[in-house]
Image (cartoon, rainbow, N blue to C red; front, side):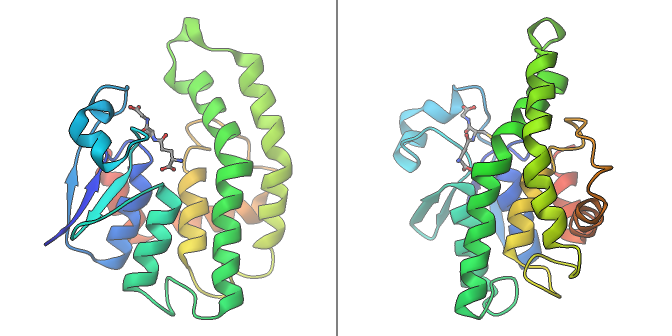
Length: 205
Ligand SMILES: N[C@@H](CCC(=O)N[C@@H](CS)C(=O)NCC(=O)O)C(=O)O
């Protein structure tokens, strides 16, 4: 049975769709929308009691939380490639995934909402600017991490890059200035130019 990916492409389900494309998986995308209605039906809450997308059903195995889903899919379908072989590299993939969620996601999303998503009269420009300032430190960390290697774990693109780059895919629409972090910007371009990333973005149109 094909993997079921719940969540519209213009949501955090994008991350999982990108991973599915990287892995060449046969999948079905069930376009559960955001807004607190489709994610709160009794049927969907049975899948994810948090009422959040993405969630997956992998032949009866249910999983939610985008980073966990991607780590699981990469380990299952691409061991020693998209998913690192060495224990230490596996731990670094977790490190970068947790880091993206805890250090980057909130400020980049706040900037996005207050610069591009909310109607003009609901936007708080000062809050968006403050969020951009909060991002400066984490973006410098990322810039340093890819200053001497093309990808976070070294020479090859892995789930660590996909997970962090998918969070940062909101940076451009949030108009985050990346001029102070050129290595990070180059790394982001390498990641987002991948055919699988392009294919996942096409689903958002
Ligand atoms: N930490 C979760 C967050 C999931 C999340 O908040 N997803 C949003 C959409 S991007 C959602 O489902 N919101 C509920 C709704 O809008 O109904 C993850 O990364 O999977």
